[in-house]
Image (cartoon, rainbow, N blue to C red):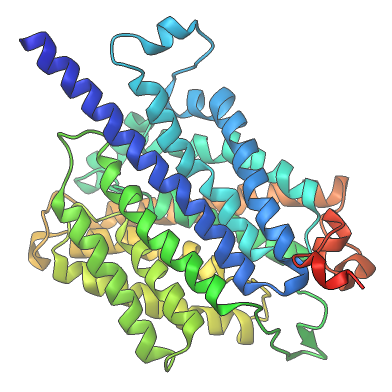
Length: 404
């Protein structure tokens, strides 16, 4: 009887994590549609192909290199040994955590849209998913976490807490994107004689669809980060919901009903709550998400109009800055003084969040500067004017329109 119960429990954990992996995998369709709806028609095919190609390359490099770096587990064994005595749980755990690693190139894709060469970005994504991201992942969640987390705990009273990746995934991805955007420079016509010239987006329904797909999948991203049935938390689910709603409502007011900000506000709320979703009170989650949304709305405007950075989807403020806020917010709203579960240190959260910023900026500049020097990173003017769909893929999003 005990053996049967243990088998059922192991099988339940495998199924639980597999369902989470599938939900987070589906989020990559959300990344694709969000980008497709935001870029111009002449760059829609490129967005779809980039996301799928980056996902496929990330799978290979994370399987062979990244997951062993992060967790000290490799899969170059007979299939019978991979199954082991736990029904292949480690394989499914790889699939689930791969979905997080593959978010890094998917996030960056939105910032560099419409003027980046295809293969250099695929190479950069492989480096990030296979080496750069796993190194940081290993320090917070993985096999090398004892040293850094022990330092945080002994110095500030608690380890750095990031339940579902506000910092480890989103902040790293957003801050890695910033060097790429800066090295590429703005799209042709985005700024003329120092003055901002807005470039219209192509498809609001696609943008909205991307946001909805991401929001639904996010409940796998957050809730299934427990990685077992025993660890599942209703608090994480409700906090994710209220943070998303807070993000929408704050963006609705701050942006005066702008559909782009409203749909991205939902994502800002979800990004912000990842780190502390298992700690904060639901009311606290609402304000964590709402404040994250305000950071995105006003941060995007500062980025584009004051700093004149042509970050097409605003991935630096959305994932980078809001992800950093999420890490810090867990150290505020996760305390018992704000109705949270406690056991978290504001200084640990601040230090860990800032460490991610520095790490991402240094590695991002190193990788993209090397790529730009070796192969060039940007399409030439003629290719960019024609659009990345025709220049890179030799077909546009609506081929029937070209049939006379």
